[in-house]
Image (cartoon, rainbow, N blue to C red; front, side, top):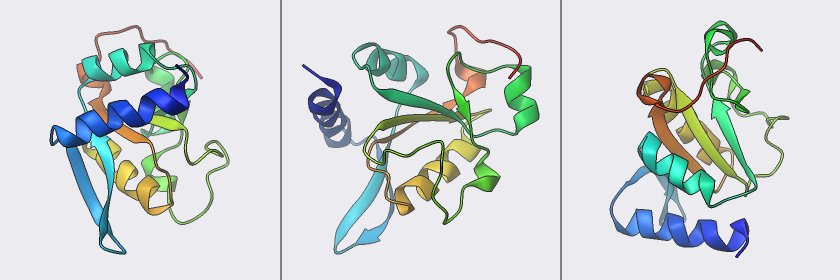
Length: 135
């Protein structure tokens, strides 16, 4: 089963379990992103092929240590403009920061920009997987 078919099913299960965070109203339906743990995010990533890991910390924090393959778009730079690094608004985007605060803010902004598969999994402080240094 491909990612475009699997992800909505997984997201539906998580939303039904009450792990979503509402970020606004649009035509009566709440726009949401999914909140999960780092461990659950890893499981979701293992079952998918086409996703982005988004680090929303500063470039200096990113260079110090980040998840392999993560792209860096600082939370402070996410606004109302199109994000060149994230052209597919339906692609799964796994978002993290240092502790979980900026990632939640970034997720709210991404949903407001029209991204539909946004998954927030906290901070690198709780990440037990591999990390790399440098750009």
